[in-house]
Length: 127
Image 1 (cartoon, helix red, strand yellow):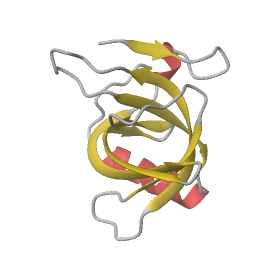
Image 2 (cartoon, one colour; image 1 turned 60 degrees about the vertical axis):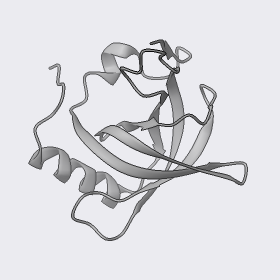
Image 3 (cartoon, helix red, strand yellow; image 1 turned 90 degrees about the vertical axis):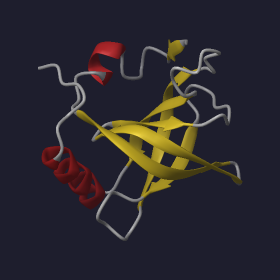
Image 4 (cartoon, one colour; image 1 turned 45 degrees about the horizontal axis):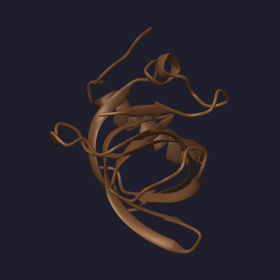
């Protein structure tokens, strides 16, 4: 497995891991340059999410994502930026994909994500 961090202007590893995150298997649709892809999320924080997919992305690339939180009917739509990549792992222990930080997320949607985070135990939190 290889996790590659993005350019210095993005979240570093310690900051990425300082945000509470939950295990969240969510179906995600994402698009770039009029190309539509699907994947799923393995985790979610109010700073971003991991999108498990074989569709190649570039660090710094901006995408539109759409996903629905458990218990809600309306999807959340946001603009994200690819912060880091996880390449295909031949032993299959982890899914390939990318970590994406929210660039444009409506305040109401951010509050919904925060409520979900408060209801469920975080995977990792460093104070």
